[in-house]
Length: 139
Image 1 (spheres, one colour):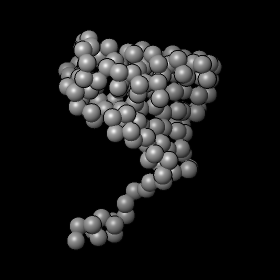
Image 2 (image 1 turned 45 degrees about the vertical axis):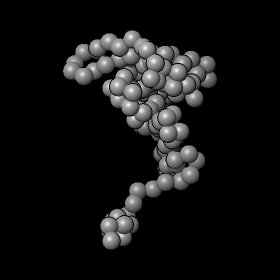
Image 3 (image 1 turned 60 degrees about the vertical axis):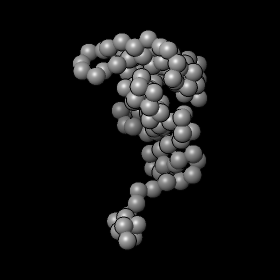
Image 4 (image 1 turned 120 degrees about the horizontal axis):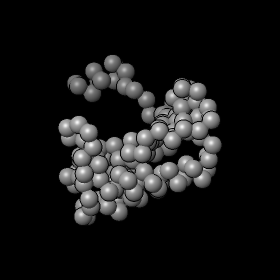
């Protein structure tokens, strides 16, 4: 995954950090590199789709589809060398979220969900625990 490769390339190395508007709102050189890699993949494979990214902003097209991208979700953790960060990407169709994924390259965990089809972790189905499951685990 292109954005994740950039996260790993910069992780625990020197990189430029700057502040965006607001308190504790960092952006790093790695955020920009990850976003650039993700945008290249989306634009190559879905050139007519709109895109909304955390760093670049809105890249509108005449399309029913919109990709929503956070190239490093957890930038503060990333900047402090804490491997609890990920790439987050969602896909809307006519304003309705139809697909989403979150990938932590440090743990190699890929969470993926498609509307009406459930969710997976590394291609294995996952589900929300029932109250009974939680109570059993507390015994």
